[in-house]
Amino acid sequence: MKKILPTLFMFICLIPLLSNGQQDSQYTQYMYNSISFNPAYAGSRGVLSMMGLYRSQWLGIDGAPNTQTLTLNSPISEKNKMGIGLSIINDKAGPFNETNFNASFSYTISTSETGNLSFGISAGGNILNVDLATLRKLNENDFLLENDINNKFNPNIGLGMYYYTNKLYAGISAPNILETTHFDESSLSNNNNNVSILAKERINYYLIAGYVFDLTPLIKFKPAMLSKYILGSPFQVDLSANFMFHEKFTAGMAYRWSKAFSAMAGFQISPDLMIGFAYDREISRLGKSEINSGSYEVILRFELKKIYNKWLTPRFF
Image (cartoon, rainbow, N blue to C red):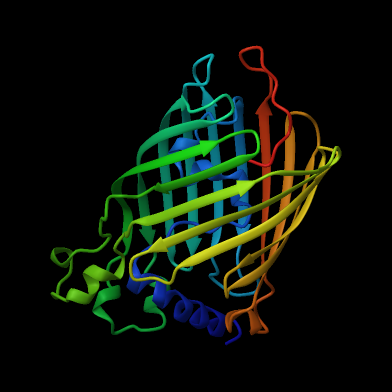
């Protein structure tokens, strides 16, 4: 019974997600992971950058979401006019397991001595697996749960724009402009219009922005925001404020509107290696549950700093 109750609770929480369409992965340390949702970010750091991230959400709840992300991006021309990127994201929540993979290309034009505007496109797809045996244990008579979904592939295309200087950045993107469906009526033994809506991929629109203030020669402050909009779902806004000390240590707080508060910390271990941590505490009804111990996120970034005989000083984005 102790295992069944959290599982039931988890499926109840997933109902809005499934009825309104699959959403993209959620990140607290989004400022280090822009390539996952904006292809125009590819190559903007001027170095070969590799990043791995692990997120475990709603600790203590059986079947709660967890995400593994691996990205790579780099300029491919000496003047950083062109960039390429690759992102692989694996999401698991209860019986659902989805893997997204995208290759990105960006082209950058200089708008001033310090400003750059990048245009990006990505192409890839996602593979969905659903183990409906887990749900059949809870409702043995539901004909919709008769057949598992194995390696269901859907293609994907994304678009983005990204403007940046040494202090400022802002970007808009839609990483999944193809609205595909994971279920169709022809695959079921009984026509039911609600089923086609059950797992429809909807377009996710992103807006990201941030600015770096030099408070002292050794302390930098960066407020940032990420907003996401999906048709039929609530508008999501993430606000964050980080401080960087001695180009080494980063600490800050974040607020996901009406959803959660977060604490973040990062450390530049070496010129090439950075590690970051984040902890979220839900403030919604879900967060007040005794079986929910919050969410945590770990990020590791490695960069080949010297490329085209240039070096990049540590920065937030």
